[in-house]
Amino acid sequence: MTEAAGELYCHRNTVLNRLARFGQLTSFDSTNPEDAATVIAALHVHFLAPA
Image 1: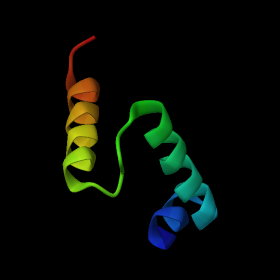
Image 2: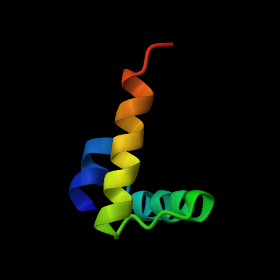
Image 3: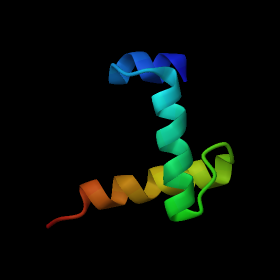
Image 4: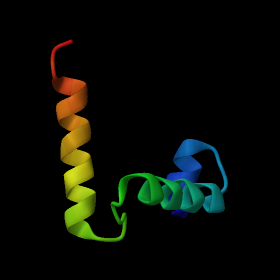
């Protein structure tokens, strides 16, 4: 989290809070490797799909 916060220029707690909020909104658990892989795959498809 500390490294991600540094890359995003925000506090570590901000990253944790945003991940928690994402989990509330989507029912995905960012600490679960399967859920994390699903989210990453979905983002890749979303950004690579033609408009």
